[in-house]
Image (cartoon, rainbow, N blue to C red; front, top):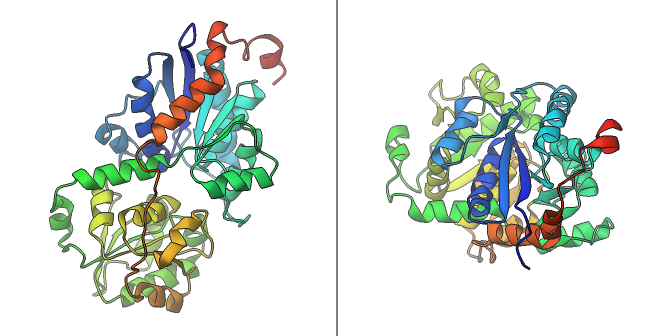
Length: 380
């Protein structure tokens, strides 16, 4: 398709660690496209250095054009404040299309604020479902998919799920931005990553654990069962403690009382990929870490009873253990899977998303965008 008569204005809304990673890959590709003018809006959902700025620094991302500085809070409070601050920002930027990523409150707020202003939304990572409506992320995914105009799905299952929900127009299977970056980063990581020396662990001789989901951090007993299982593993456990988990970890004495859990603050992206690559196993409630483990061929124990990344269960590479101590220990002691692993489409997701945007929105360049002017804006 020929380039539009003027550069398309594309705004990406990000706010949390997984979105910074996805946006880093896509921003780099968009910057290579002469038909595109791209701006980044940071909601401030994750805001301290270890959860936000370090990713911009390490992944060489340009500073956001707009920083909303919303910060933490309850789901309603946080999402509502994002909506309040996003509306004037979007009116001022007047983008042709708004990109949202994944399933966070920033994703939901970015999509809702945009469609209420008449701005088309493209959802990167569309069609995923855990079918667990108790997860706030599941609600966010479903709502965003049903207000978005374009759906960039990571795999065939996601495409099929969208079709079952009546969404078949402008759906494209593109692969996964996080997988692309993880595989590339792991391949270029040093054979002996410095973080292993810092944490005093050896390659393939430790487990890596992450816990941050509300279901596990808002439930003291669930968190206690997870910690109990980690303490009984037959090898050291590296545990980068998410800010949401810090108070609980301290209350349970994690890393003290003679246990073999090595705690640390959240690590940089490259350090995290090095830890994942060099771990014997990974225990996590993170969707992103599950798929990175699958891509890198590291056995994973998911500390949830459901997953939106069902392909990771293939060949036993990932096992759903919930928070039952015995189930976690049984899953962690299973033999290393021998089945194939990984994603066949790795490496081209950013290019496919850019091509898809040009294919759908290329003709918008013939006119100045009017979606946020006049009656459309005043009606909000």
